[in-house]
Image (cartoon, rainbow, N blue to C red):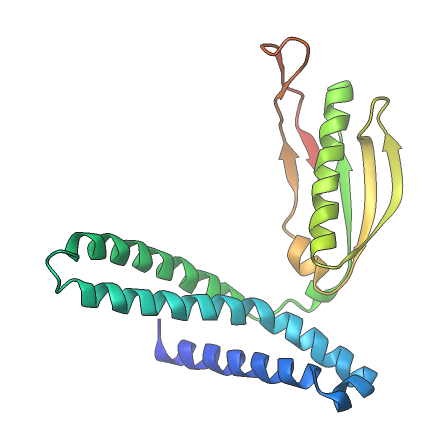
Length: 204
């Protein structure tokens, strides 16, 4: 990775550590406006700081593996570890370059998630319900708020259609590329060999 990019990443990492310290300061906590602004900045820096920390660890692993190449007994294992570490390093460098791209000003907005069951009756509705629960749990893991705006439930569970508003920091930026259709195969009891494939479930 270019030294200029590493320098930029190092500066962002240091700022992340600085903001973390500020958030624990009593004066910052007393100033709620500043606390909220710093909390937002901390959240924005967290992904790049985490990825950069992992990348630095991989560089240490590469250096260690290269040193082991001089040991005849360890050479084969070192070559394998070096190959894996270099592949991981390349993957992480791509992730870091994406994280350094200019932010879309809309990324901090909220978003609506719509999940609709395709034709397929109960099975399609059940899968739509599973898909919506997956998004709800992901939202909860990021401390976002999920508010169901409208829902048409299936006769035996799930949803024929459900629309929810998801609110929180960076919601739209995380979800804006989520669109498309899914297919699912279920083994239907009581006959374990009977497999039903409902049509795709559209969502966006």
